[in-house]
Amino acid sequence: MLENSVFQRKSETGRLNPALKARNHRLYFAKFLPLVIAAAGLPVFAQAPGAVDSTESVMRIAPHQHAPIRIKERHDDGTSTSTNWSGYAVAASKDAVTSVKASWKVPAATCNGSGPKTGYAAFWVGIDGYNSNSVEQIGTDSDCSSGSPVYYSWYEFYPAPSYETTMSIESGDIISASVTYSSSEFTVKITDERTGQSFTKSKAVSTAKRSSAEWIAEAPSTNTGVLPLSDFGTVFFGDDSTGIAGTNYATISGQTLPIGGFSSSSVQEITMETSGGSVEAKPTALSSDKTSFSVQWY
Image 1 (cartoon, helix red, strand yellow):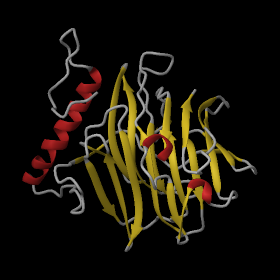
Image 2 (cartoon, helix red, strand yellow):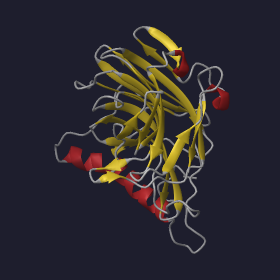
Image 3 (tube, one colour):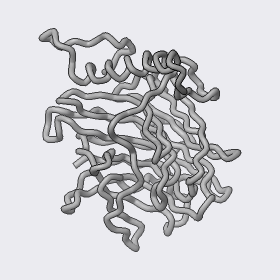
């Protein structure tokens, strides 16, 4: 569990928790580096005027990103396997997707069990990436850093870098998020229902195809490949678990429907596998109202 203060949380030995130490460094540079850059007369990355919470600042997350799907196989029965994604996608024609909404419960990362002591697990909603090379997305991570859990929210207009917000995220928090397209810009928004904190960012993405909508658990990547997937147990997406109505819906070609409301030929259930074929994360079938599902770590 992370505190807002940059200078908190020592272990019982008096040493700063490694995960918090790393986050403290990130928050320190997020707070003070723009001042140094401004003093030097260089351009500063600025938050969009439409941001809900004016206290939010953002920073580059290095070195990982949340990339388009790395497909292993697409099957005729509406299922796919991937080395970095698990969850659901709805494929569409170019320029068809204008909105996607989701809700999920932030899962706890287990960092001293059978999973990796340093690993990463991202949960997000987005447009593009299933059959294109950009992804407009926003989400949360439940990571492990040297055996300690780390939680945060972020957004990304891939292939641009991923940026972290300073929202305080804890395991068990209920998250609602959306990505919308209007007037040549994408707007990503995330809200933590526990704290009421929200973050919004808008940006034009000239390469976006708007040809898919996604609700995903992901193993993030670097330029050398997919990173180890942290043990997140089970993540729950949708109204059935979060109580937030109208989530896990998309607007495609003017129709606003739940995931399972679109044609079966366009809905893809995605299982994450290693390159050797071992299952890493697998979604359940959609609920009877076609909105909700969970993804289990293996």
